[in-house]
Image 1 (cartoon, helix red, strand yellow):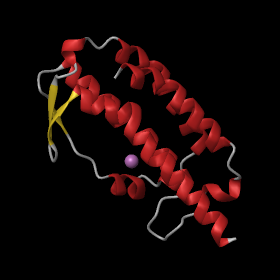
Image 2: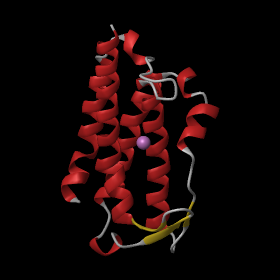
Image 3: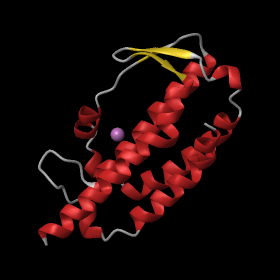
Image 4: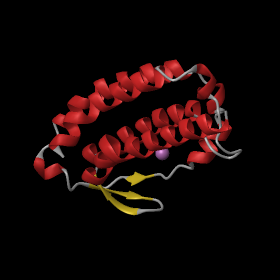
Length: 156
Ligand code: NI
């Protein structure tokens, strides 16, 4: 977990740099009607950052809290992700990670097995939430961004 915490802020800084280098025309391209654009992926990453930071804080601070599921597709659609300012979300992602990194660094060995009860997935540990927050969730969407870019290049 130490390596994941070490990567937490630099991985996002690197991702943000890569997104800023993508030509404007590709940002709102959807590879399929129901698929997310890069713009929507960025806002999703911001919302998941909010949700996972909040879940981890609850699990660290409270006794076995309830963790509410959220429907990511409803959020993307009903909160009109594609209408929100992507650059503001990129800046906020870095600020959120900078602010939260000290919380991760302070977690004591015995606190990694603290738990919360997810309304759909059952018991989650601090370790499971932190792994998703620091590593696996961003990795999934880095690959999705690349697939969008490949699809954009292929349809030209
Ligand atoms: Ni996701």
